[in-house]
Image (cartoon, rainbow, N blue to C red):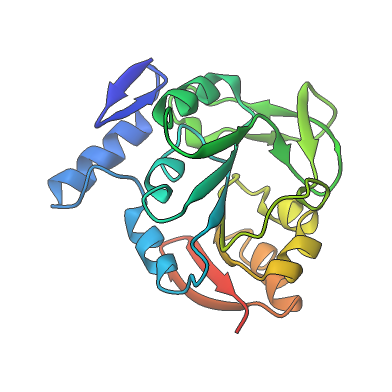
Length: 206
């Protein structure tokens, strides 16, 4: 484990250290994806609770605590979970060591030690627990961020009842080969695309 720009991360991870260093060189803060967070905040009206799905080491969870009273984070991978715990220590972040999906089950995940953000679900039974967000009885939340390497649609399927109930602002990563999956699913349920920064899209209900 190493500490880079105030964040603890796995010692083998080179990707995030490089991205944050580039952000600093360009005159920005020592943060990751701060620009999409700021874009999303423009549409949020409820700053009590937010969800961070695919929290990794806390690049979103930690700064979200400066805007929201409580952050609920989901991160199943042991290799980054320990870093997440250290990064949000003493902050109002509730961490769930599970993955979210469309059904309660188990999955395997491929861990990328050099770019932990590229770690992803491998279909098939495994040792990582998966829960439907709809089954978790969470409090009302004003924002949910989902960044789970092409597993976003499965997460949305298992969360749609809660999303339609609370109608939060949704920040969802979409790769070119998934943009007609997660985004289309949300639009089919009445959400609209509000803005995007690179491959991160903001959705909401008007």
